Length: 308
Ligand SMILES: Nc1ncnc2c1ncn2[C@@H]1O[C@H](COP(=O)(O)OP(=O)(O)O)[C@@H](O)[C@H]1O
Ligand SMILES: [Mg+2]
Image (cartoon, rainbow, N blue to C red; front, side):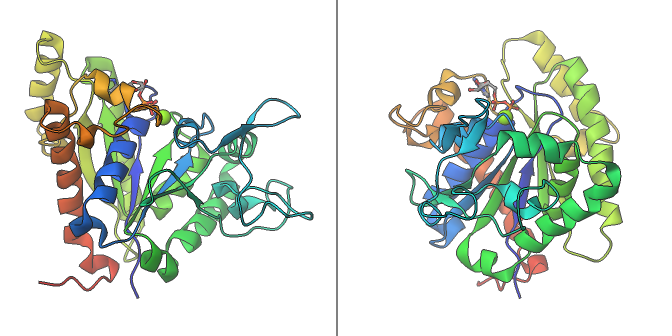
């Protein structure tokens, strides 16, 4: 029995590149057959702000209050007794007072190798505020869904884009993740927050016992400006940090307009790895390969038979 690798992009701060780097990773995995083995990547939008959902054109506006809901799903469009759309919150419909829990349905996107489970703003806000005693239930459902061996047959990898606040929803996601990385901007204050997050993730990993492992893939410096002395200094002191230095990824994303330009799927190309021969292409590929090398090393621990 094999489990799909589940990678969380996490940082309790906003604007640090969780959504952008998770998209770059998904697009990178999706275009490399040696990584995906012909299977799509599944992105789960776990942020009520729904940026990933918008990026892949899966967002609609609720007539009731203007909040973001997913567009109707083809397989549910005719539904009369339930919701015509799906989101990750389908796992918790009973707790949300909206029906019986079911496994979320993924939506196809403009990229045949990328599927997305979109966000539902109000359900997610409600789920993220569930009292502490409900967190184990949220988590158990998420684990049950993502550990289903059929998911490993269907997808090469699941990537979870998370919200910029510590919440019950993130705790549930962390319970289901096999891998986590933290994008951050190399400036002193953000770094302090990041270090306490590493401690938190490590504790989660220890509490997991002999179950599927949770591995920390590292800190991804993002929006790096190589001529900014503060960035250089911050990165150097992090590198030299006795406890956390080893977590700094040997790859980074510099501040480049191409990351923002590809936030819109209508722009061509819509992924930075298609900007052939550019520094951004090269840098994004290094990041993608670095993530995958580590995930690949853990595939046997997830029950995958890895060929020579
Ligand atoms: N390396 C980068 N260079 C330039 N712009 C970036 C970079 N990384 C992210 N951005 C832009 O910064 C904004 C915030 O990034 P985002 O990935 O949405 O952060 P988060 O998901 O952590 O809130 C977005 O508009 C995105 O396009
Ligand atoms: Mg985001």
